[in-house]
Image (cartoon, rainbow, N blue to C red):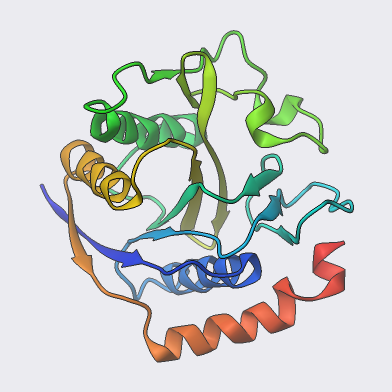
Length: 225
């Protein structure tokens, strides 16, 4: 059975606004009044995003704290995407590890024609998310089910569950033209999760709501510290 999913392709934005938009979508998903969302976005300047439980220590670029966990990521030329789904949802089962695996299986299916060497990190030989330090950098070492290319981590992810909704944030570091990379990722979700995408950009009302959240939370010194 096919499932309708809203596709949001964003222009490069600041880290604070990117995170505020994701939270805005998560809150609306929790209310049960919105389609599931795949949002694909970029960063207008090099920026660190740090996990919810990490120390936001001084770094060489702007820092924004995510709602999701995981390690620190230096964003620049990467592609970032967020999946915002109800919980439970029709796309995957099996808890946290099962959801990571399902998302990365879809990614690998879409990316395989250009990156046939993509493989999963072995859960038996890598630390769990709970076992790593709170100051770790995400792409320094793989976690269970992360995607690797020639032994190097190229896709990392983190999640947050709130009020019956799931936010899954992934970062993809692959050397490929951006439009093609977006297309391959969408194809993977279409083939593995039976998604039917409905492209709908951010509305003015949604952007206003996200900017309010950006001002109140993500740009505040208390949130970032």
